Length: 183
Image (cartoon, rainbow, N blue to C red):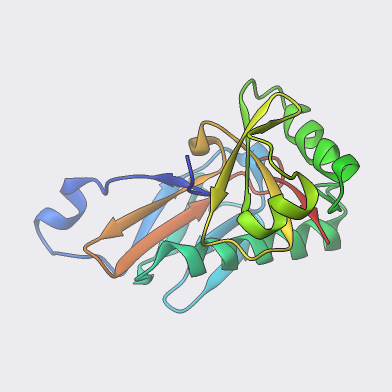
């Protein structure tokens, strides 16, 4: 899979009566805080859910998934470094192994690597698999990182589209769902 997040169809009950909503509440596991949610113009870190164990996310303009996925990665890398999660390593073979092991440490069985073609040619030249993980080359990622993610992207979060240019997203496991090897 080449996507960073699970692609999830919106619940038809949401749009049936009123069309595309401005905001939707989503249930979350309190153990996976903080959460990264879409707002009408960007992303927002939510440190803890509301009293009823939900977070609110807003629908926003997202015409192309690539820039949005890059924005999500930038936020997770920044917060990971600030909070010292240990999810960011150097962009070397050793760093890629550390990114894989970081995600595996949460008992996730199937890990995949996604990276820009340019980066793979520099760090993992000519390989289709590394450390027991299949490698997916993506054109949306910038050329300075390799990302280890669970094969089941629902562990990380989702992107749900309302037509071709509006979407909503909740990254409900940013601190555990991604390992990054970055230059």
